Length: 90
Image (cartoon, rainbow, N blue to C red; front, top):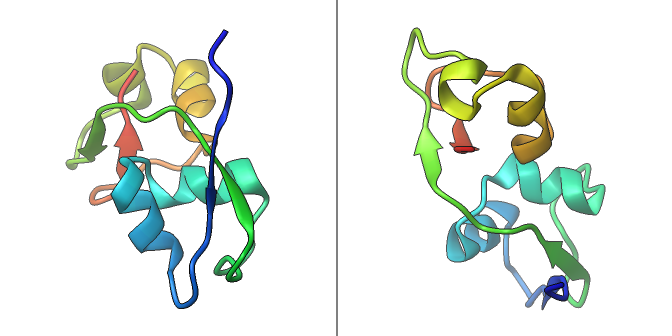
């Protein structure tokens, strides 16, 4: 079993910047850590497993991207799907 990866937030860092650095969608990083806003300096974030981050195009479905709506939720921690959204493929 692989130990969870963690990251300590540096002064001035934003959620989008941290998510991009570790290859995870910002919404997933926020959901895994229970964030409702920007993280605070010194806060330790749990980093979900990185994967293939993909930008959704119009007409694509959760089943197409991850095999099923349930798998989509498991990978991305959201039921939302819209063009331009960054998600993990599964």
